[in-house]
Image (cartoon, rainbow, N blue to C red; front, side):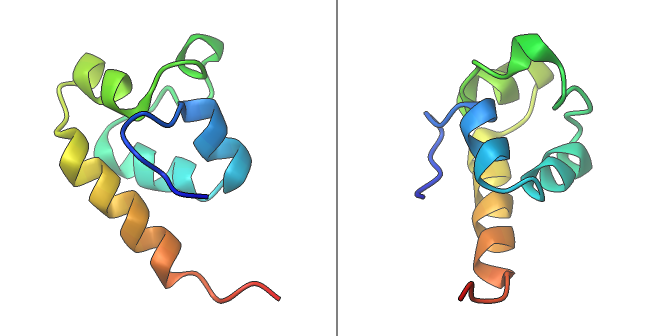
Length: 70
């Protein structure tokens, strides 16, 4: 799955629950909030005053560092 700024929070978390840790490290402590699930990454970053490019890069770095799945 390609994660972009348009990807919803719900889609990302369904794809890999470890993304929640990356989001929480960035300052998004509401990753489990039902209202955030339909927000795009860009919208969620805007609400929290975060740079969506930086958060997206952190997510992509996390995904690239995972062991290859069989």
